[in-house]
Amino acid sequence: MGRFKYDSTAPPIHIEDATLAHLKVVIGVKLRRQESFMMTWQPVDGSGDGRMTAWIHPCVPLLFVFDDADVPPIDPKRLEAIMQATNATGELILDHLIPPPT
Image (cartoon, rainbow, N blue to C red; front, top):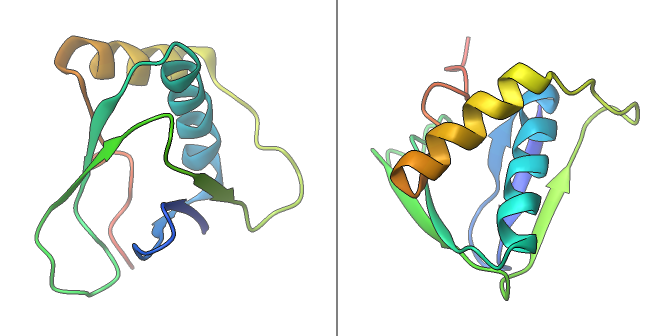
């Protein structure tokens, strides 16, 4: 289970490595184009928070931490689906991308 950390104060979002690799590409493309956007998720860490949204902006530091040293393969169809959904609404919604804890 990898982690996505946005800014230096918020707790990390726990995301499995393959999904995190796809998000890294999508977020990287958006920020390289200077496109800010919202990202929404339901925390799965038991914090009690029902839903969180962050404004993702090129000026805020990001950190992608992978548990495995090997680079996960990128599925072009999955990548395109995530990018299209984000572009359609202006929001990257992670609900269906982060599996609930088992």
